[in-house]
Length: 201
Image (cartoon, rainbow, N blue to C red; front, side, top):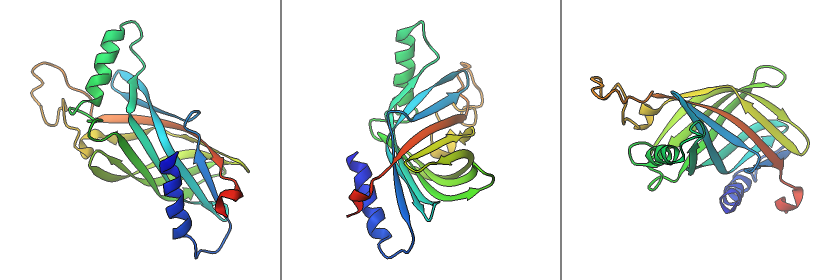
């Protein structure tokens, strides 16, 4: 939570001269889920912290820190050793290198309402030492004290973030038939609670 409040301080000072009604929602990291899918495997990764800010009832900014060390496989249920081995490979320098890059960051750039509860989101996703813009659609419900998000499937090409290990693009011969799909898909279910006004004083 310390990182969240550092972000919020920057937010408050950055908007100190703005006019309008501001609201901040802090991510509930316990209830929120980030599901991932790659080939035949799937699992989860946790949000470490995050916030969404509204100006005059519209989403104006937001930032979310993803705990990459929390990533785990959830489809291997009968062989614990195999599951742990896969988890370690995902965290190794072959893929996300979580020892050197323990977090990834998604920052909202623009949110456009397309229907009553549907929004098109543009943001910047930083994985390891690379940052690229991505777009996706999402269902968003804004309540007085609660913010609910469920995204459509978000697809990224891992090689655009330099995660090239076992990619057919970089090893086309596939001698050992060990290729891993380049596409990683995510679905996010996120809940956030409104920051009470006392924190603004």
